[in-house]
Length: 274
Image (cartoon, rainbow, N blue to C red; front, top):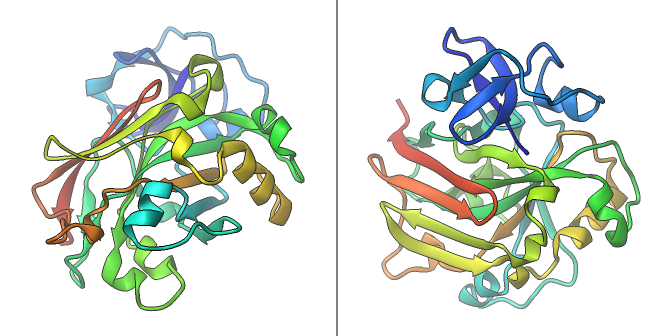
């Protein structure tokens, strides 16, 4: 099943289940998708539905309690930066108000031109949990989505802490929807591709992760309580703009896509901060 959050044609926030062409409006079942994950609600189609071109996509979880980001987690990305694989996951955070949905613009800030793309797999948690063993991670995962962890590299490199460069407004693309695990199968076998203006710039299978999804769920649920709707962004693969010669930054007028097999394609135009 594919679950998404959106604005109705009249601007009312809602959520629902989509077949990729229309979305069945489920706002009467729960006040939002995050709330629905914490409840036992019917996901049966309703009489009210919208064409996807009638609605405005929101991040699938517009208001997560936590967005936990993992850095340096693909061997190809580690190697392109001349680093050694970390012994433990490299963790930083992104804030909910930095996110945009499918088709919504990523925004390059006034203070820097170094806006980089990072195609990633997002893992969405389905229930409150703590101390989850890797072998049991599947019992707490609600689904998966595409993510573009847009990075303002200049600010990311101000210190050893990544947070400033990862939290400019409207720099994190999330979507287009959440796909439940039963529709995907083995997530490690899926393929991730990032395209900038139609040109492939990142390409990897998810088995290139140093710390796979179960390991990340175990690690993160050990140092914090994971709640329904929490998002773990699992890291980016090699090919980022910062390590290209010359560097390849996203600029206003560009279009960037993150595609993961079994999930779909997240597409965002790039705009300049007004």
